[in-house]
Each structure stands twice: as structure tokens, then as C-alpha cells.
Length: 217
Image (cartoon, rainbow, N blue to C red; front, side):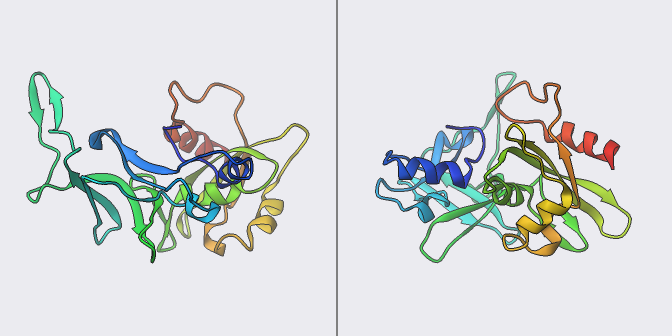
């Protein structure tokens, strides 16, 4: 499955059924996969994006962005018959993704660089918060976006799609996330998932949710 991250709960369910599944990180520019877990990966390892595959190189710069190079890296972007260079002077491609390498060499993705926002001087990674909320049993879909705040600059707001007959208000969500997230990461607002279509492709439009959240606060 490609397009966005898989919830930890789904990985756990699949693993418990005995399915041979892999978690991976990749991008079009690298001809798809960059890192992948092994066939014998544990549930804990499946929550990472695995280890680097052959013929590829990866490093994390000081801003936490993933830089890539290797035999699978494309030549550039084709525009009107000309190839636009995407590499820096040392041959690295800036992916736009944020991550880290753990103590065992596994890649852990934090989120997209352009999705990160600041709240009271702290870095907020919406995808990290979303993954913690997805661990809650009655949540089907979640997206976290920033809303303007006069004191902190921005604060997180969450849109939730719940199982039929289930509901979570902001106070209930805060109680459930106390042991999962640092206090400044817990959303200040909770909104119901909108009924109208919100995407035209496999990826949800975060800009749509940003505009919607700002109207609702």
C-alpha cells in the first residue's frame, strides 16, 4: 500500500494474522523503495520504515530532513524536454521528509517538512500525533492541522471519523492521549470528519482541512 503511512494498529492486526507484511519508506524520485523491514520483523520493527536497501544512500541533515542518493535516484524532473536538476552539489536529493535513524539502524519517519509547525517554540509533527490517535480503538480516520493561536502561534486541531455510534470530544481525547503524547502535542480542538468529499486522489488535502479548521475555531 502506498501514498501515506499505515496505522500501527493495522500493522499489529496483520502481524497477528500471520501475514507476511513489510513496512517501507520510499519516493518516486528514488524509483520507489529506499528502506524496508525484513520478513521476520517484529511488530515493534514494523512501526519503523526498516533499513536501507542496496544501491541506495541515506542521511539526515541538521534540520532532520532525509537526504537521498544512489543508483536508483532519477536524473531529475522532465520539463518541456529539459531535465531539471534535483540534486545538490554533492549529489544528494532533499526528500522533504523528516526522520531519524534509531539505535538499531531503522529509519523512523516523523512527517513531511512542509506539514510541521511551531507551537510555543516547540516543533509539532502532525503525522506523529495522528499515529497516536489511530491507536485508539474507535477512530477510523484522523488528520491533524494547525490553527492560529494568539499565545502560541499555532495549536493542533484534529478531525476525527469515528466508528458508528461512537464520539470523542476534546476533553475525552485529551484524557486518552495523556500517556501517549507530551502535553503540548495534544490537540486543543476536535472536529467531526466532514461529510463532503475532501480529496481527488489517494492523499487527503491538508490545505482543505487547514482552511476548514480555521473557520471553525
